[in-house]
Length: 586
Image (tube, rainbow, N blue to C red; front, top):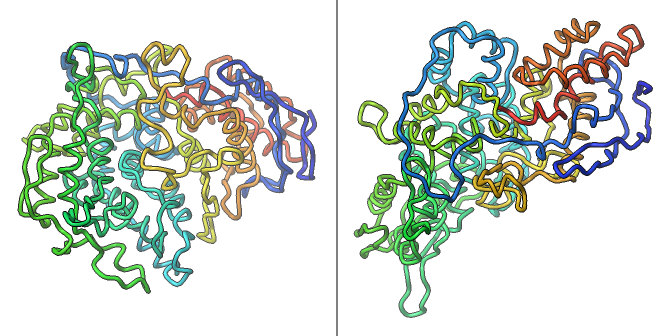
């Protein structure tokens, strides 16, 4: 196959295989120029089917465990295994794939040196370098058009890719998938600042207490607007109007409790073989009375200042009478009433397994065993010092558990890498930066020509995908297994992802480019090249057959040819990122 030199072209149709075996043509775009700062040629497009697919999500595998929505006896708790011995480089890379936005050679070496627990301690001690809000101010976005979202995406990509507090970034993005706000549904002025202030709350509280996080989220401007409880009014007997119920409902359904009562292992409690509802409409209506009267600190929209300040109570709009929900009655209204309501919800037995399981899904595996959920939920209940909701204890329990640290050979192990993490994994592995600080990656939520996902751009409070999603009509669904990320995986998104990453790997976007200097030293040796890409990018999880196929593709381009080294590097990276071995993190 000819090496492309950056000229406009029309590629021959190449096949990518998806779950049902359908082969899809990959429609290429015209190539640009240099691949990163280290080379000056675009990459050749190779047949992704040669790597056993390229269909991405269709090949996902998930971990064994009880079927979501079925009954089980609460699991026997087994000890959490804390590995004290120094991990190997491959083990360190796999750990970083779960705990960060992507591994680097330096971070792998650090985990090998410090061990898992030492690395976690170091990360917990790191302060945030720059908040999203402060970065927007420092870069002059407070002088931009008031209702623009410019600045938000650059700040998000910059932090996820280059900030050293990688554990905080990863946990914060997991929380954003659970406690969802989407910038595109906001109607306020200064939307970028509203969303920046919200994400800052998640990041600032990622290592704190979940109860404190609930309080901060409840009084946040962006959340108040997103779930329509800003200026929420108490009932009016004359007109018959009732308080807005959006936040009350989603707080229980999505942020704390879930729809069904749960055992500590995350399985539903049953009555006559059917799940028991956690709450009913009367609970929603009662709780909604509590969340009345919250308003911004001012009406001044000439600056974004008020968007960062917690909502305050307007007594005229607030319900002070008794509000009953979940067997609890709160009266008196005001911020004290909101605090009492949140305390009651936080104390509910569903919160530990409901939140713990979702965090495990976001970090480690789509289908954690009931025993794994129990162990983490137990730490949520009590961190060992009588504290409930300690996020540090929960994070440690998730990442140091034997089920996280043991590489399973079962075909049902692991999770599909979400698209954003594929991009940030590549970016971190190969030193992506933006000299102008423009970070022009932008909104990547379009599935046809981008990733089909973008942090902070969720189309609804239900995120881009649901934690209990299973592709309908599949063996996975009939087995009771789930694969949340497959909800945004389709023929269109598979092609869009490969084409978008092809362009990024080859050309970057704006001045956002990779530095392939280090990896180019291995370009002449296809085995060494593929080994390095496999270690840093794929956590050592490429099979021998996949590695052999990629090496063969690399060797189809002479290392001594014009632009040969950079093309060989690009082939190794692109085909790795299109392989099922990479797309499924085990």
